Amino acid sequence: MGAEEAVKRDKATRGRRFNAFELAEAGGIISGGLDPAALARLADRLATDDGGSSQHIDWCIEGGSDPLGRPSLTLKLEGAVSMVCQRCLRSFAVPVAQETMLLLARNESDLALLDGGEPEVVLADAPVDPLVLVEDELLLTLPFSPRHAESQCAARGGARAGVATAPSPFAALAQLKASRASRK
Image 1 (cartoon, rainbow, N blue to C red):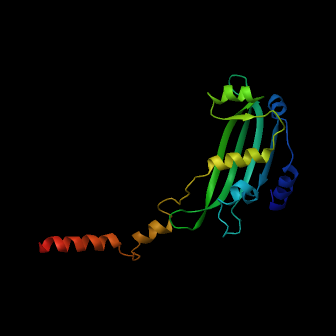
Image 2: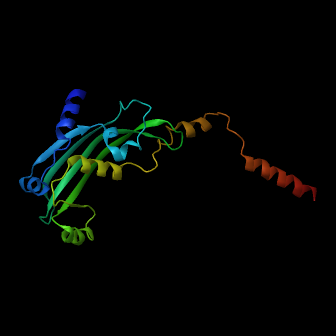
Image 3: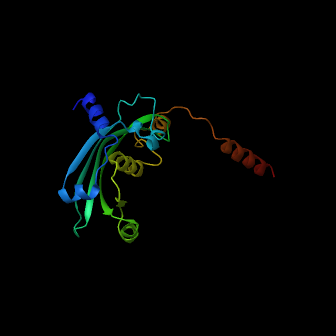
């Protein structure tokens, strides 16, 4: 699918709410794609210096039931987002491949009952915005402190490659203390 088609599909989905219980009962599927930078709660966690070219998430919400026959939605996310490595401060693509089953609660009392024993429960007493589900799942999926793999990080690789590093001020203090101790 081309980038223009993904944008059109995203715009068609934006604001389109659905009845989660009807989707679960019918075993229906809704899907789309988006630029994660367009999600307000996620935008400040993303790198901005690469123009967003490596950022795209395809999502799919499939209705069904869990093994106990309770209505559920399976949310699948695939793609990549650009984040800043907390070691070297350079942007890099973080792959996203997540699948989560969400049990549906009809009201607050169902939510309280299910939430105690199940990992993921969604209150679906009103039509659900699919992009809110996608944004919530991305926020839970992405690392809090993103870092390159150690072998790929410029901060780690630079020290190994023989790049001079600044001497530690604590090393100088240790030498000073050692020389004063030897004088006594």
